[in-house]
Image (cartoon, rainbow, N blue to C red; front, side, top):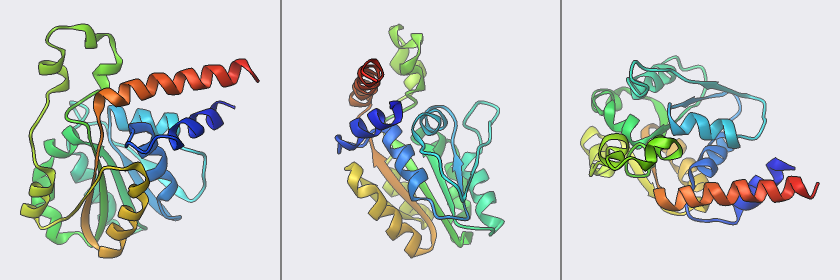
Length: 210
């Protein structure tokens, strides 16, 4: 009942929303493949929204500060060449290990990285720290990095997605292109927080009526 309520709510919103991105990436991943998921919000959203399925191995790696070396780890998974590799990372995690992309992009035969770009680290927006006056500066740590420009400098493919329904077609194109490709999904962080509340309310209503 809860899953149906969540899916109905998410399917009704075409603005990219972090849990829907996680759900749709996991559903799109090819059978026999690997999904490497980043820390902070992505792994929590995958736990919340991923539908049960077979044929996919999910991996994660906890860095010393939570986000260390995640691009490097995804590249290592892809280097094993045991199946299609897909990574789901937040924008800060991706930028934090940008050197790995700059160094490795010409050497990768097949890796797609989905970057959820919500303008910083918003896991703390779900916790009591959100009420601190210094929350945005110290916890969100907003950035102004041009992810497309960074990919271009590295020689990696890049596509920017601004509608939830455009994610799967973008993943199809990235997989068909070969090499290292980044699909950047632009998310409105404040809208995402409201959507989380609305989704919880939809679940509460569904469970109360079941």
